[in-house]
Amino acid sequence: MLSMSEAVALELIAERDAKLLREGRHGDPFAVLGRHRFGDADIVRVMAPEAAVVEVVGGAKSIRLRPHGHALFAGLIPRAYRKDYKLQITGPNGISIEQDPYRFGLVHDAIDLQQFKTGLHLRVFELLGGRECELEGVCGVAFTVWAPAASWVSVVGDFNHWNACKHLMRFRHEAGLWELFMPDLGAGTTYEYRVGTATDVSGARRADPYSLECSLEGRARVSALQDLTGHPRRAKPWPARSVHIDVRDWLSSDGPAQSIGDDLADYAQQHGAQAIVVAPLYRRDAAGDPINLITLDPLIGALERLKGIVSSVQQRGVAVFMDWDSSTFSPLEGGLSA
Image 1 (cartoon, one colour):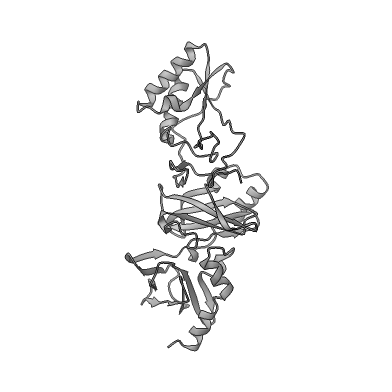
Image 2 (image 1 turned 180 degrees about the vertical axis):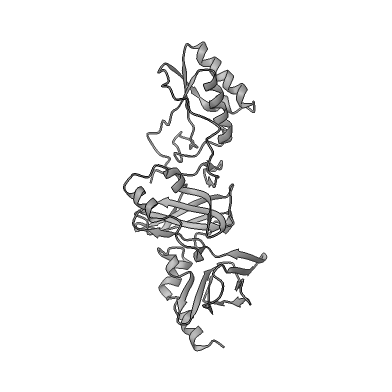
């Protein structure tokens, strides 16, 4: 039987909040989920759609949370219970120990947000997208997307069975960004966003325009930040006479980077050119429109391989221009046209 304080605590999941969470449409999930103060104790609320039992573990003893209708669990824990608690979830596939993403603080500081808002951030490619990082001593991935007009945003992937209800993001209204730190994820994680607006309450699929890799289906993949130090840029200006090539005709082979680079340089010099213009580089739909403007087309190969080929061409005294020839966006669901 519930104590009076515990019964009151469970009622703090307002029916409106519970409904929006179950539907995956809550615009402020951190106000409800995670750990919050309640009198002399704390309350922990968890969204676990496939769970039968949820326990808070890591302290002197585990504490079983009580179900609050479908998919929601809540319960009181002592104020002194360790801050880095974990969740033991019993579901159809057995028992797993998981971090609670809603116990973590802000991903980005005020300086980053102010610089982004004013257009002065010089490394936006590190701010946005899915990036491996460490937060509060835990390794994982920080997801960040700019969607100032969205009512809610969630990140979905293999890690949550593409369930838009499970990992709703935090809105940083001062910059129009949505963010969420996902513990224990790493490079190679496939994901995309679900974005809901006032005119599309069900949420649309959206690829991440700042992902550094994508799958053949156009879904983004988390990629470690690229180290460009091994590929120095040439300082002097390049000549303007050039020849255009379809990069896929050259990079679809399995040859080594040095050999392909030599072939490209020979081709340019045979045509009296001092530079080559390569395109297309983005992952595109059947009509040729890019699905996003950051991700390298996986048909070309790995980004590191492309960098090696470019370096090989440059060593022969031939310039390489990347032609980001994009006047339209892909209209496919998950593309950027909307």
